[in-house]
Length: 566
Image (cartoon, rainbow, N blue to C red):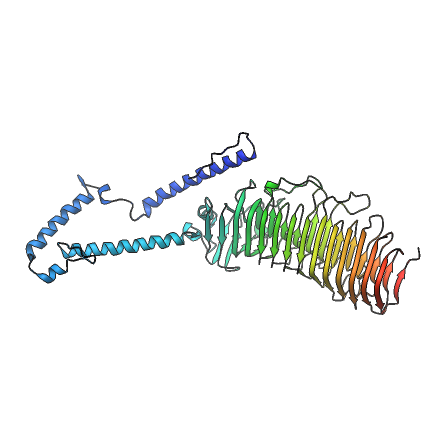
């Protein structure tokens, strides 16, 4: 047992952390002692020497020596010592001589047995670096609750706990520091919430909620949140509770090849060290020591989630790669991947989303800081209603305060495949891409492909609501026949500014407007565009005459361009 003694002078956060850590160490040591005593009683093979065991008025060792001497005298007295072959047979493998063949055989067999035991112990020590939760009483048939077995196997951390094929029923697992939990593969090993589990429980999260959790990883299994348990009466309990997998204030963690299904709230949640979320105002952040950092979600899958498949809050230096997040339960703002309040320095690459309200949403609530420095690359959104939704709620309308923190987003090589009103979020409208309230946004090499069934009267791509310093470059749009416009820059009292469209291809898409610019937008540029319509509508429709237009060619529209004279 190793205790911490370097207490600070002042009673505060560090003092509390050291105290809790010491109590955990003492508790773990106490549990280990109890288990050692029980194992000593029931399992240990070499717990005592013969001299330690009483026998009548003597002990087992002395009694055996006495009986051995009697037998030796009987054998020697009968055979004598004149038979050479018999004498030779009394020489052991190591060359030592013994008076009796039985003693020599016993001697050799004990050497062999000890060698086997030593080799077994050496091998077992190596194997025990990875422990099997079944050895601690876990039931992979799913009939018995395995929560306590996981707790025992994981106690104290510094361990890799492995699961066999099967289903483990639990009410929640908390991972200590320096821990890896692994299975045999997705849909081969499953951890499932027991039917009696309360709504607020989390299937897998970190044990240490002080902001000092570190080095925690999970890989190669399925997590089933069993959200329809208890006759479908349960609902999410608020904050990050009711999620399947949560990293809360973890430094250096990963989830790899994990499948998350049927979470009441989130499939995966990377957040700060708290069960609740933080709403103390735009520009205000949680204590940095409470944030999660250096977390990687890779090759994972989420489906059937009640809110978002993968989400982040008040954390930084995050990687989200090679994941598939799809088929949300529906009923609200359900996103495949959501980069939410206060997230910073997040990279997303090679992910797919399908049949959610939002494919990727980068957003913040009104009383929270917005995500910033988010880089999204090589993403495919399939049949999501709003494929890419970038916004800071409460900072959109005329009279709303401008966002202090919504800035620095980059999308590279992304595609929106047939976005439409999929009814995941009733009474909303679809978009291939929408930008609201953000500054410094770069979208490069973006492809929006419709199927001709897009909702009438709505733009496929929209820039609106006080967005500033927006550049859309290398944009392909096709197949949005019913759209109000393929690309629309909204004007009005809450208009954006400093917006540039460059290298735009529109073909066989909106029968109404190719590119639309709203009123009072005085610093709008369109540079290099090929617009091919369907024989109706306007290629360009601009409600101010100050836009800079360079190298734009429009054909197969009723009017190549309509530009207001005033």
